[in-house]
Length: 79
Image 1: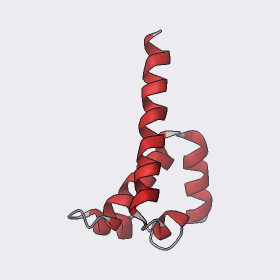
Image 2: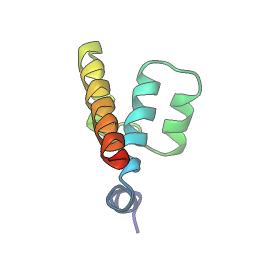
Image 3: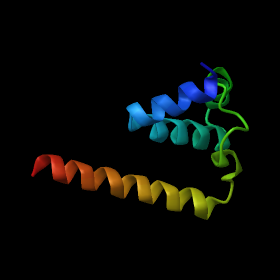
Image 4: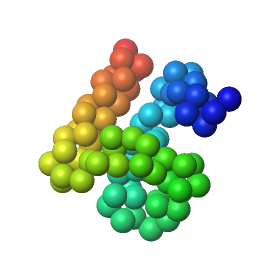
């Protein structure tokens, strides 16, 4: 099994995988300490469109979408 096949399987089996991958890539782009090391260890560098997400407005928009998704999920779970 290739790393890419394994990643696709993880993304399908675990809905948190894509959010975690997005978060660590954005943290690396924001120069948060040790985030780049984690990206390299997980072999995520230069493999995703997230690596090109450098515009602050795009990053903010993505963060708002993720926050909205989680608030909606939490509301549904509570109901």
